[in-house]
Image (tube, rainbow, N blue to C red; front, side, top):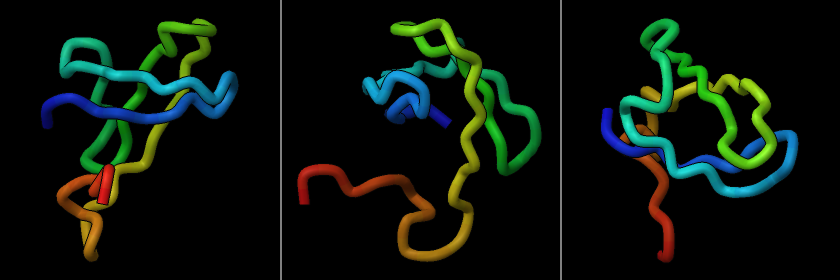
Length: 59
């Protein structure tokens, strides 16, 4: 999957998570620990639609 860039829902800071920093729970969900506040958070992955390949940042 590669690097995931997400904002933490608790402290709202960006998390740059490499593949060894998050756990894949199932094919649609990953779990990670925020490096800033230490909270464990879950993210749903987009698997269909225009954003399935990831966010188009900077466009």
